[in-house]
Image 1 (cartoon, helix red, strand yellow):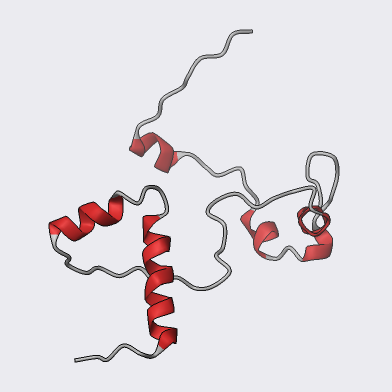
Image 2 (cartoon, rainbow, N blue to C red; image 1 turned 60 degrees about the vertical axis):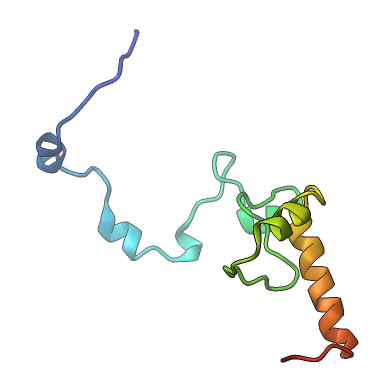
Length: 105
């Protein structure tokens, strides 16, 4: 049996009755969840390393996005450093701050 795409209007979707038993979902406890081949135990999978979280990986140390204005020639020089130029710049600034020999005015 060949199935095609069925399209519904907003009004049709609003008039449809949900087949989900939401009361059961809202009152479900962890022990009520059935773990089977279709639903592997995610926590154990993550702990064992067999499964990985998707999405952007968490950074070891917190990075804070900022916005600054720099001269165009400075930006061109930084970008010429190649991939990872922002990290290189951050490392240099951190090194400069730890050095303590610089004065601020």
